[in-house]
Length: 485
Image (cartoon, rainbow, N blue to C red; front, top):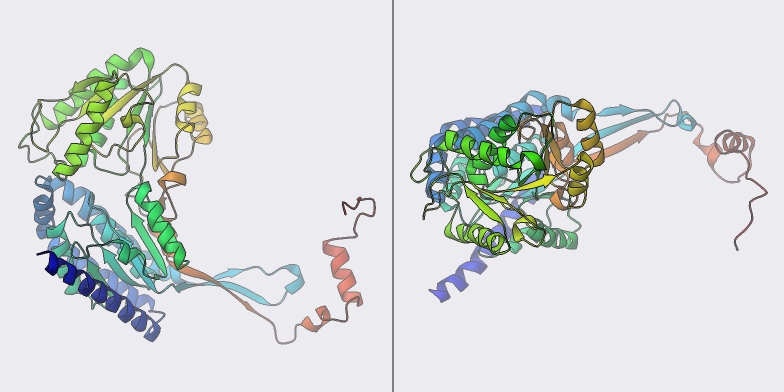
């Protein structure tokens, strides 16, 4: 068995290198697909996605052990379809060159920016939304006119096989190719000299990917997650905020990069908030999540053990745990509210990515802002308030990849706006026009008018035109400035 594995790895690496080389050659043969061709690729992708939606839902449920059908439809299939629709409707407009103004010195010449496909784009998807986080970036890359290689995670073999079959029916591997768990060493993929690389995953792995990409000077888009806060201000109804936060932590069992990671709540309303979250969760999913077809489980036993370690560490260091349902030995773990948190606890130091909700008290608005400011910049921020001045202050004083006000997460699935992180939560954006720009090269084209007297700027220096231009734009040097040398 070990000998077979050793033999299979070089074979898969050779196949990957072959796919990459074939896509490079194909791109050189057709480096600028027309708008009609791009729309055709996007329509073919959409057709396949809608045909395969039932099989994909079954595959994801199989990979998870328990994944709610409605969540796959609403959070994988629907937003991917919306993203493709948006690209189909707008790609021709995005492709048009932008006219720009020349400097006054170059008046009568023309200046424009054209958007050129980069070439071969690599996409590294992750397991929590394996369709949206692979096919969504694929749509952006196809809209920008690129060839695409996709690397799927090793924990979703059924989904990987389904996507591979789905894409293979619509595209040649010179256009779109997919590899998955058969590639034993993922770093072989990210080490390829892509023209752009999109990675979705943890900050720790993102740093490794960025170091590898630097070897080839490959530009990267990193979507990394982080600890996204939900800030409940004093004027907002606690029960309403609690219900929306409970929903954000319940969907996909909290395994979402923009899931509310922790809640900041006025100190005097902590008990009310905890009770309201618990009731809201039970209203949504019942007192027992075990066997509930509408509640997703933790993806595997390894991740389940990680969540258990976070909870045990918090409990051992003095936290109080309030379960939102009956305990279960399975992976459909109900939400656990954690109070009495301190910075020494792992639950407050790393992204949770599961059904745990730390609740942190604050006394003043400034204290809540300071708490957010003192931590790495998150992928999302949620602010619950009807007070415009307090909301503006929070947004002005904090940074995050994106924001949803008085709810959670919905900014992500509005595809006319960019989605991306900042700092520890990532860099670069995709979705919409910004995604098209990210995966295109903005190429400046200056055209000199036939009779433009550019020779007046040539040596010998000091002619009257040069003197007039210098006096107009920069004036004379200040003779009183002291020389430091």
